[in-house]
Length: 130
Image (cartoon, rainbow, N blue to C red):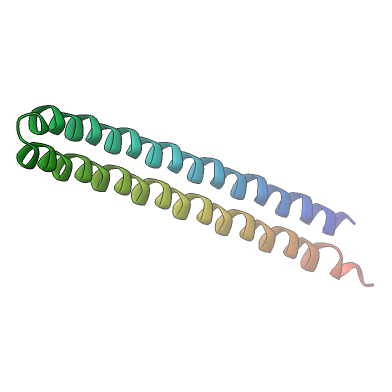
């Protein structure tokens, strides 16, 4: 009981709390907040405000082909490609890959392998001469 339970409490639970949960909070959530949301706010919205709206005011009113279409191609589309997509790829996906997945692999799995299994195999239950 002392080995199995201690190994479980110290290894699996700690590995879960420290690795998976922290990896989720720090990696996935932060990556989402910093990458996807910021990429959306900074890229798509700015690209829309600066590119599409300006292209409409300056171009569509003056000339549809030269202004609105160019403003759309150069502003909105570029803003979307450079901002939202990059923000998604660099922020959310990287945050997920580096944070949540690494936190899971390094924390939960290692905590399970090193703590629960070692505690079970080496320290308590298996060495109890049963």
